Amino acid sequence: MKVAIIMGSTSDLTKVEPAVEILKNYGVKVEVRCLSAHRAHAGLADFMKEINEDGTEVVITAAGMAAALPGVVASQTVLPVIGVPLSGSVLDGMDALMSIVQMPSGIPVATVAINGSKNAAYLALQILGIKHEEIRNALLNDRKAMEEAAMQANEEVVARFS
Image (cartoon, rainbow, N blue to C red; front, side, top):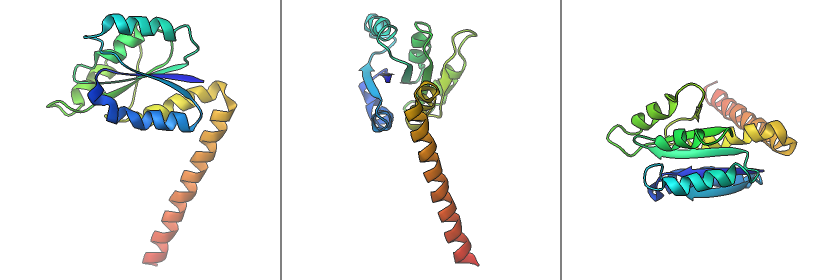
């Protein structure tokens, strides 16, 4: 099980690290790169050739502002691509969000919330869970634990105001 994570700038690292941690906690091998679609296009193309052949199953891309990276990546693979729009511009990530969700027909990029790398990791895990039963079972167990925690919180609220 392998996921590639590509960010456009090292300034994006702190927003991407939560996804790396989540994926590794589930036993997924993660390849992380900083390859700008504009400044490192040849290196990005080389990495795309590599992951198209090495067993990578999902690609997470994180970019801000014009956010060309997710679309450029999606144009070079048929692997599922998840885009994470990042804040950091005057438009606080709305520019990146609109750029990523407005991909042309035939080149889709699944998109999560602004700075939503955690959900990008969970979406990647759900995609992996289609093929890998151990991932699917781990996700189901974690969802059950989330539900139990939410119900416990509800019981505490009810007890407090009853």
